[in-house]
Image (cartoon, rainbow, N blue to C red; front, side, top):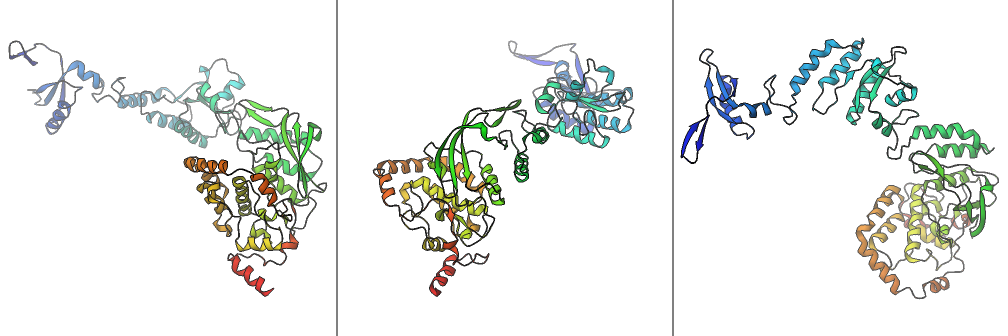
Length: 525
């Protein structure tokens, strides 16, 4: 090896160095030299030729060469840091195929395929593990090591491959596969700690929510098995409770249940509408909620009781209202009762009413489509939500300055909406409110769109600050003015509205231009 000596100003040679000679074909040698010469990991001394075989060889520094190239095959290490060579690893596993067998050709081919898919030195070598390798086996331990669709330790041949692929894709530590010699069942071997963190120990299915160890399947089975202990004696209510319980999708979902009335105490009346009275009360046991490993109860919580007048005879309308309330899981109640009042969005009527042609509600909160004798829909609820937004922004009930009669119904169907002073609320808030009460139901947002726009409010923080400043500067006497300006015939309790709506044209899909239709009819009258 020739190198330069600075002190002497000349080159000198180190003799008898151990080197590596790599044979190359003539056509390849130039490319190889250029390649290695420009890589810092290699020290390239030169080129030579075997005088007997006439083959060319490249001369490397030995220690540097074997830091990067496999001693067995001469190929560059797949991972030089750990001296790991993928081709050699695969060759070793192929040679070792004859040393093991599951005695099932399909299983053997599956294991071989998994072994040949290795990509990294950290990858676990999936293998056939003789059952006698396991010690201290208990039924629960075996089940915690193996997930099965057909019950404990059952796995069909045609499902094994898909299951294994799923576990590898989702980065579960899977050591291999075995077979119980007595029961002939195939068992997949997992890392136990990781398995128990991700799979339900009761049913073997993957947790619906891993963080909280919550299994939707087991929860539904538990509710189904224990339902017999909570029957009410009323078939329609029992069916409703069962239906609501089976809608559970998340560990945070409230478990809808039959609650004995003697569970309530400290009952106080806080509000009354046309067909219902609302009470505040304490619930002894409280609602069920999931706490990591089990359901527990939040005892002695304050709740609201809505008692419908004449509700001894249960109707479909009453049951539908119960379903509708259950959709809104997160409701905050104000001690003053004001928050409770705005939840009567025009859908409350006589509990015993079975006449679907009757329209009940509070006129300002009832959608034009419903006033024109069409059923309640999500679009109708969104319209009512727009009116709630108006109330929250202004502190005033919508249309509080006029009588709630057929003239107001006519105005609403013409597209008249409550007026709002722009500085009273942020522009983004007003824009959302107006989209919710659009005259054409097709133009209204759905629940998901409303939620997304509300989430974006934080971006418009300046608008909210300006609106709040305006409210503080103009708040003097607002409550007194609101009360003095409320029309004596403005009624905000639910009632039968048919006497105000009977003369309206019936809504059809082609009659979105409400102003034209209603105006023409009023002229004819």
